[in-house]
Amino acid sequence: MSVPIQHPPEPTIATPTVLGGNDRPLTLDSTLKDLPLYSCPVEIQILGRDLAQVFENNPDLPGVTLLDRGNWVGMLSRGRFLEYLLRPHGGKLFLNKSLKVLYSYARTTCLTFPSKTPILIAAQQMLRRSQILGNEPIVVQLEDDTYSLLEAHQLNSAYWQIRGIETQVWNERMQVQMIRSDKMASLGRLVDGVAHEILDPVSFIWGNLSHLSGYVKDVYSLLEAYEKVLPTPPPHIVALREEIEIDYLREDIPKTLESIRTGADRLSKLASSLQNFCHIDEVYPTPANLHDCLDGVLLLLKSRLKNELTIVKRYGHLPPVPCFIGQMTQVFLNLLSQGIERLLVRAVAETWQTESLNIYGKTLTPVDSCITVTTETCSLDGSGTRWISIRIGNNAAPLSIEEQQQLQASFLDPHLMGTETSLVTSYRIITHRHKGILKVRTRANPEDVLEEGINTEFEMLIPLR
Image (cartoon, rainbow, N blue to C red; front, side, top):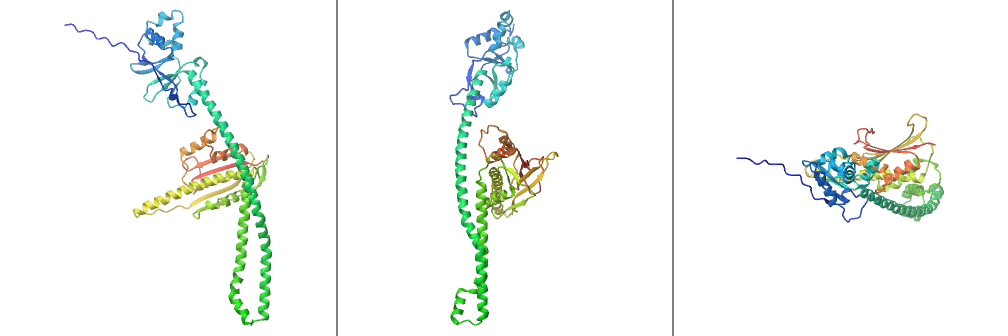
């Protein structure tokens, strides 16, 4: 009995399909899966004439992905296929042979991306490749580990469309920023005028306090003189002395005057701090006392400084520093506010944890919140150029490595297409306007060396010129 010989089944060609290419408009976050992707996997054992028939039946198909027993081998584009067929004797050499022979000649370097790759990143890498491969399709790896093809001109068209959107968004944000800057300038002039109006009556109070103190002393001297001359006053004067409590008044009036003096001094400093904060910078930097600037910002933030929060000042000797004082005040306010917010978050977390531990009879020792401000002059490279170092640190939870990387990425983003945070604004003021350096250190990074009791620290370095 003869057994029929079983031949392996002829390799089949999958029907080409188009994936992606939805009707949603492209955005700055669009990825490759939002573009039309052509899927046509073929086995490398099929004959060249079969692939020619596929291309003839599907004129829009840019190419096919090659498989060897189901495993991905590479990509063969329509252009490369036709290029080799049009060569002398190309039809005889490749049409009646398997694609493996043709692919050994027509193999090219495939530019492959995952389907979640942003269009902007993929297009930038595509533009860097050789001009010989300029029109070759892009290989896109889908989430199910299959491969599809993307036409180069479609990726390029999407890239320039998104760049147009990016430019439009940038222009809109610049307009919003200009409106916001104009509003802030108007508000600054308004606050400056209010602070000036506050300073005028405060100066009257402050100036008259010294005279009032002298008048009170004179009245006391006159009263003592009367008491020496009339050691036994009439009954109605004795009754009046008891009614007005003359002994209490002698003790309380100096305290009252000192209290008024303290309040007037604080109000004067607060109004001066508001004026400095709303200061409109000149075209060129002017020398300024940064210690007074720091003290003024701390005074403005006093309402947010709870009793549990301690400010440690380690001021060194600083000469007048040429800078834009209004912008430096904004930087100090941003960095100090950032530290206060992280400390408040930690305090809330400790309160919640303490309440949770109390249920089980356990206790948690709270850690005192502290912000440290250190200033000094230093030399970075030993060249003799002096720099002003201002370090603002706190003992809140240290920045994680991910947070630090995101922060550094936002600093280095030239277009700032994300939200421009207060830290990004501070970085731009220090590096661009003052030609300085802004460093971030955190205890989560083993390479950073911090003083005891400081978990996160921002250091500003301003050159002395």
